[in-house]
Length: 185
Image 1 (cartoon, rainbow, N blue to C red):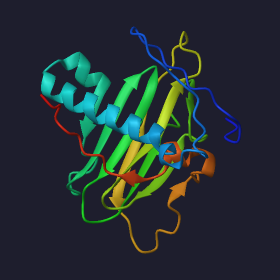
Image 2 (cartoon, rainbow, N blue to C red):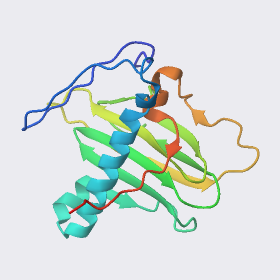
Image 3 (tube, helix red, strand yellow):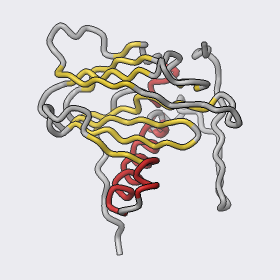
């Protein structure tokens, strides 16, 4: 089990020179949700590009899907690298409950501390549901998710299970949907 009340280290590997700086979101409250916004935009951009590319290998690593054909306008974006990043976006006119269960997966760490998550996603919102990381990249780890989506009822009391604590609100809290803008030429 992962202790979610400790500091964490973010590591970025790049083939290009990049600049990084530690920022205390307490001093810059607008940056609190920067991790979620960055992962959401990355997932959307890469999944849409893979869908349009025609490259089957790329489509296996980057998927955009509708998890329930009966509920229009709810999309998931999944990036499979050394683990998995999973984002949900609710463009429908109703709140939905999204359950993601990685209990059958092997040798993975979950940023939420549990392998089963249940979240209420209000209309017009998106959320980074899980960031799964290989416990030991050299080992034979497996991502085996089960998922379920349904309409939220008025009885839906808890917004997140496990609860999204203050420490992880910037990564796993619900956010307004980010619109991709075409590049300016």
